[in-house]
Length: 142
Image 1 (tube, rainbow, N blue to C red):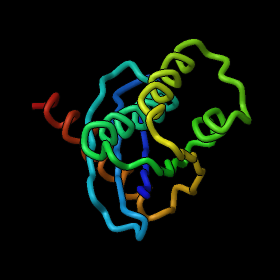
Image 2 (cartoon, one colour):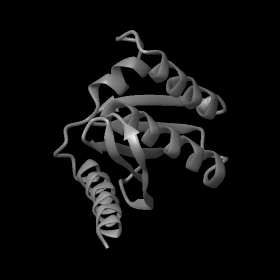
Image 3 (cartoon, rainbow, N blue to C red):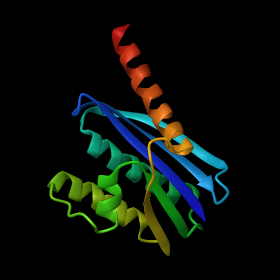
Image 4 (cartoon, rainbow, N blue to C red):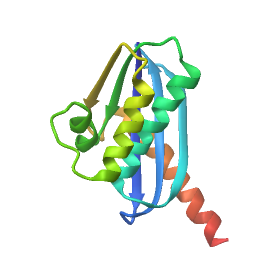
């Protein structure tokens, strides 16, 4: 079993955005962590979805034999939409949701769980993405 923690953030909403992903084993030991600047046109919700997309792609490429995954996010929108509690009204979010569904279809057990922003692994994902945002802004100032 793998635990995946994702976070996406946008400064400006839409604005400069980045994602952070932390993948852990069942004991919450970090196996992989990743962050990337994703551009300057995304909203917070789009960044949150793109973090889940990136995590699902990392799982496909690096953990092909793993079939039991729990995604954790501090985005109630993302979690409730994946769990079918909330409709996906916006077309652009439906498209992002479909990409995740496609990427995780090979998994036998997938759960999406909401956690607070204060969860240590979400805080790590948030710190990673904010570091990427800061790096990008600094690079553009020079």
